[in-house]
View (cartoon, rainbow, N blue to C red):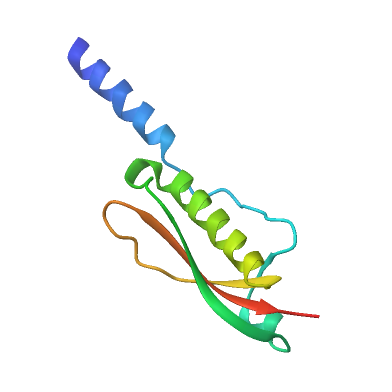
Length: 102
């Protein structure tokens, strides 16, 4: 009985670590959708990566998106459209199309 309680508590603790990616912000770059960049100039596609994955995928996605937003700023963009990406074993990736609007 005691072992069952310990295993259950350990499983709950691990589940508490897993969660969705928190929204990230980099000053000067805004996430958008395709309609929001209709009149903008396409610049490039960028990719951010993180070594966090699995139960830490939420943290990994936040880190990868922050890296991608910083890359978008570095190439002169001010808007990004996130591209759906299949996650690989061993890392988390975020891909974005970069646009210059305004």
